[in-house]
Amino acid sequence: MKPVWIVDDDRSIRWVLEKTLAREQIPFKSFASATEALGQLDRGVEPPQVLVSDIRMPGQSGLELLQEVKQRFPAVPVIIMTAYSDLESAVAAFQGGAFEYLPKPFDVDQALELIRRALDQSMHQTGAPEVVSLTPEILGQAPAMQEVFRAIGRLSQSHATVLITGESGSGKELVARALHRHSPRSEKPFVAINTAAIPKDLLESELFGHERGAFTGAQAQRRGRFEQAEGGTLFLDEIGDMPAELQTRLLRVLSDGHFYRVGGHSPIKANVRVIAATHQNLETRVKDGLFREDLFHRLNVIRIRLPSLRERREDVPLLARHFLSKSAQELGVEAKRLSEAALKHLMSVDFQGNVRQLENLCHWLTVMAPGQNVEIADLPPEVREGPVAAVAGDWESALAAEVDRQLAIGGGEVHEHLTHAFERVLITRALAHTGGRRIEAAVALGIGRNTITRKIQELGLDGAKGDES
Image (cartoon, rainbow, N blue to C red; front, side):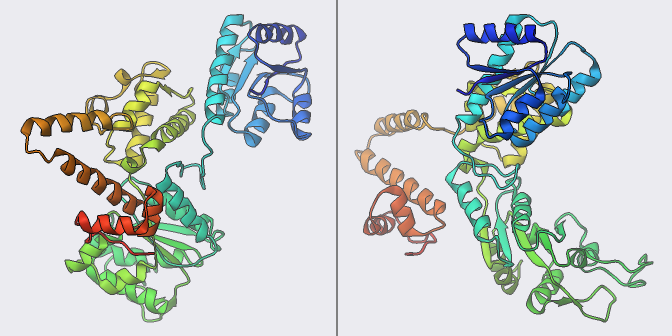
């Protein structure tokens, strides 16, 4: 554990805290000013595990120290002390990202308990596996999310059209924004439009703009989203719901790079990267005649599949802590903390609304949960009492119950039936994880290429999409 830093120009306060931490065998360093502490950081000294600082000191203030530390080391909890317990100081401390506000004079045990809480949070954060995050909103340790991050990285120098698929609420627009931010077009506009949210008769004008007098009410020329996104990225959300006639117009733009405003006669060149997204199965909509096949192939140059939250349950604690912290910062309050039991329960919940539903839940908890520590009983009824899925550790109990059930039924084929079911789940999930690539799925499962091919045939999975690469 790294030391706790104490920064206060009052020697008696430093002495009290030093003796308290020494008694508890907590390492510490003391500084008489913010300038002295910042000087250590400037010289490359490792940052503290927790920073405890007075707010008013000669030279740089505790708030300036807080701001500097948060910019450099956002994960370090900072406790602000002050003998001037006024609303303005407290608000400024919390707005600056302080972990807690400790008025003087304070009870030593109270201060120690606060430092222990800050240490617990800091150790939990720094002890967690490294998280790959391209933006503060896109977080994930799950293998499926690492694939998404890798895809964004590979596309960082590309202008290619991208199709993002995934359930509603899984974060498709965040991925689109990340693709734009890490592309050669990052300095140009990112323009988003939800094609399902705009009435059919207005969508054409929204996309392509219109000339003055093009229709009733068109009193002035208007630039559409394609022109607004010139040189940058146009994100077409819920592309599967686009009306047929507009699919045709979009196809023309993607094919020849030109479009016409509604009522216009002069072609306008479109220098725009298109990123589309949908929660629907476009292949099925093509077969049903609801989506143009040629447009599908134009959009489906590079496909990124965003996993549902049910496929990345291990990310629930990480996401929940992030959203609780985000909500607390927005509301100017201390972030709520989920107990281990509450976290385990949330990992078992089938969030049909995916990450968006979890974010809304965390905002609800920030406002409605009675205490700082959130238990299962503090969750809303629909989450607390709703159906849950088996999580790691529970599947063996579920398997035992199924064995008991089949033994009671009889028939003598329990082993064969359950073995086939088990292998079917293993292989289908592995293929889903690798995007249908059989060799990669075999490597992930620790079996041979011939074995997975044979099992796919034996289990009747030949219809599953996959390739031999």
